Length: 204
Image (tube, rainbow, N blue to C red; front, side, top):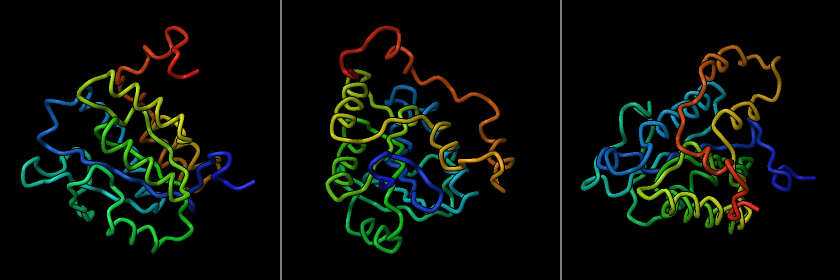
């Protein structure tokens, strides 16, 4: 069975997408600081494991640059105006890494750029792992319904720590102790616990 059929992440088969975590969104996106913190953990892990990273910025002239706490200095930023990250330059980047069929997706807004990117990637045969505690929107209704919508379309919902441990696979991994330091403290709460307080019809 292929990796895409079961949604298994692998160090050699994955690429990390970081979507539009920019200055002008800082005070509008609910749980912005928390989702950037989790995305930063994903980026640190990707650097250690030498996993390719794609970073986009939505109209940076008006919306500002990527926030410094993400830790993406020195990484190329792809400028876009469309909602999907899958612009021609990013498609070319993916084509240069043909073995990377799993995309780990973090950023904003969940119901706009994250969902558009997810649907485009799924349509092209990639498996998509949406890091739920690293994605948010201005409206939490939009955020939660978008997560459900992406799940309906075949995306895998995960958490930052869950994705990191899948990438490592084994405590004997030569980089395990280095990555373990990143997740030693629990990830910050980004308001997802309400999904599990009772049976949520969006996720049944």
